Image 1 (cartoon, rainbow, N blue to C red):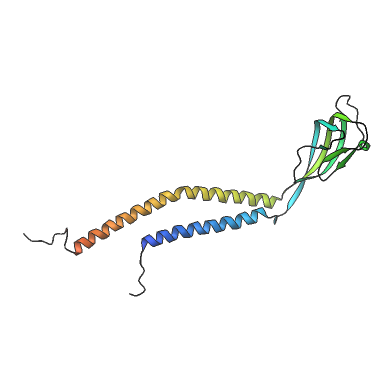
Image 2 (image 1 turned 135 degrees about the vertical axis):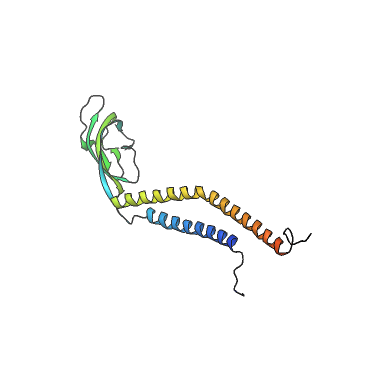
Length: 184
């Protein structure tokens, strides 16, 4: 009897809950690490913007659209003077294709320019889209289960309380208290 387990249900409940929390944290760390890397690749999607209004070609640099790090390879298809509608030829500007920044190459300025252009946008591959969806599903599933943990722990506490009460009743009966051991 030297290797007899102590604590029983209480220690099992505590270690099981702690183990569950630890496993979930490790899984979340692994999944988030895998999802934030580009292991599954990316693909480029070409987007065409038509009639971007109120642009300008002057001494100040102009940023096409709302630039961000996933966009590149800007190409101006057409630029037109917004007032007269006349085309503005490409010799009048310099475009940095990687960033979409347009700089005037002449002394003439245009303050109301309409641009048509394309750019490439880097997006995840089909596989990375699927893995992102699986990561969201995992997170939602953990949220759903974690909402139930207080209820599970409450049921465990009630079971433990009833177990303690039964144990106390048995001990009192074994000691001769509260039982039908007396005589008339």
